[in-house]
Image (cartoon, rainbow, N blue to C red; front, top):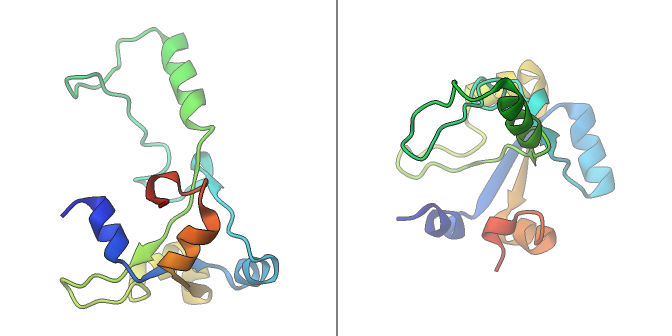
Length: 131
């Protein structure tokens, strides 16, 4: 099954955050996307690697080219959401590492969103998954 098909079958999406940020999200009815440079997950920050069409790391390009690529990537923003894992019978909020990394070391909040409503209200932002 493709990622698009899997996403369309997802009912709930979960977002881990601090208590104060959860209040801001609820009060404003808005989610904010974070800069890639501010992400604290090793798979999201400082590990961006550029590869060529053959999948080989690009490390022999002139530094100004690599700097330009790096600057371009860091213009983008993202938001981290989790989903239920049907295969392991785990709900999206049952992720200990996410509580530690994003939810203020377990003292924060995990907000639960209806996937259909979130997509409906964010079309144009979540481009890959709009109708």
